[in-house]
Image: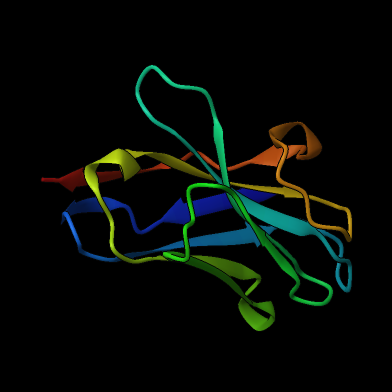
Length: 124
């Protein structure tokens, strides 16, 4: 299984970014939960959002505050994280993760597969 995340970059406070994560290697017609996590310098991993590839159900972490939206494109085996109203506290390496389970989960310990991370930097 491989997860390829991209879309990070430098954005000004109040701006937006969309992250993408392409998943490959799962058996055809199988379902997974796919999530986004982030880790700011000197801080623990933080859950951002999770989506189930089976029914599209979603769950969000505390950092969301209505600013982030996770979505999926089944045809492309890709998930997205649309992030709006970014602020400097959102600066972090963002990771996508996956696990061959149907139900959503926000704990990093519920995921077996991790991408390489993409850096989001928000300037004030």
